[in-house]
Length: 564
Image 1 (cartoon, rainbow, N blue to C red):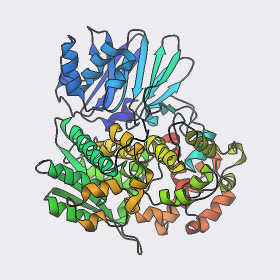
Image 2 (cartoon, helix red, strand yellow):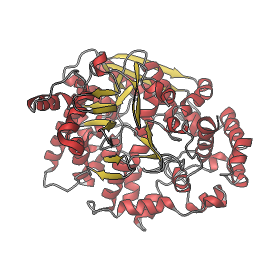
Image 3 (cartoon, rainbow, N blue to C red):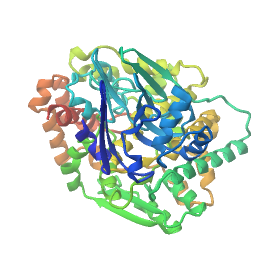
Image 4 (spheres, rainbow, N blue to C red):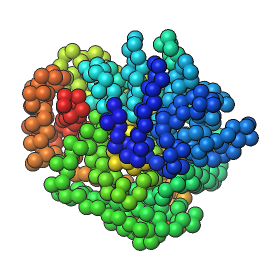
């Protein structure tokens, strides 16, 4: 198990066992670089043991508070703050923590497990009548011999929601994941108590437009500031050239940060499809005089490295930028250990073009959403997979359940809430965590700060969607960033070779989908798959992704992470 998480923590390792429990940890040293912060962390005085992944941004203020209660600390780490906080407040300790985290505490005869509010840090588990096992990725659990048959609910969602499988399911029947903002308490008898400790308060306030905008600015500055302060190592920025990452750089410069480190990656163009956004990122570098590293990846480099990226995906992820983040993180990790990244801004502040289309669509709530988001109609799904996986339209069932939850009246508010609290967790957030941590690089996402997210959800949709989306962020950026960056058409982390499947990429995907492993697995209807292989550009998703890539990526992930 330790070997499978080794790349996430290259700086230190540790194992602790006692009777019926065992912890293993690989450390990425960011706060308190000394051995005092070694994990698993054992506090013999409090009779507690802990393993923890993540960062607690308010650890310093919590430490001061706990010292006032009489606690004595042996380190300056955020890890120890969690231990003391649990001893003081029990299960409610999570309500005091502001950060991204997944941790487990052994408390004499019970195990307490927790995941952060937004689900930024992963936590997978396997439960049998004999044991509860957990890890930061599925690969570690697979080494235990868990059930690796395909989960039919997850399969239908995987092929419908851009690779998103909402918690608690994963594509494997023997692996589950803890939901965001959730704790588990497991006693020695095997009894499990699950609690959800947070949900965003999206109640509309009576703020004026000016007040909404001012509050957005204040909260974003705080979100960036707290992520810069919680580290004993330098922090950089992944700069795409879009508004979000550019705004992070601008706010850092405005706050007086010196020697800002920025990193960008680009790929070869294919036809009219640009493979980089250097035109825009270079403007930010010049304006703020950042110390910049720029990497250009040829298409010839992508395919040979694809298997590496897939081997480091805790779950199969179809986002074309997964490989981009993997290759970028490899280079960035040579210079720095922590980066800020712009994930969450589009979901929180209505940056995607499909929100407006959904809002203006007719039909049921699911129909309005599905037409502009779901990757393939259910009828096509039934043609794509073999009959044993025809177990229902689980995507529709799940979305209808999400839309029916209290706290959002307008349809588009329901979409925003579902996107920022559920879908983003298992698409861009998981993608960035997996691909950066594969190189011992921690990514922090200020736009997913819980206070900022709650504020964004309370905002009238019309305000967020003004000026073709992200109006509050564009308002903040005016006068700070070049207008050419603010007003540009929204781009996506480009990787044309995996979007327009041609040449060696098409041959590669065809080989995977016609391999003996794929045929023996029996998931796909080979007659239909061959149609997609023959005419891949006729099978594009509503968001202009490749359905062929979706099928090939899932099979490739299974071959690398399960079969080998």
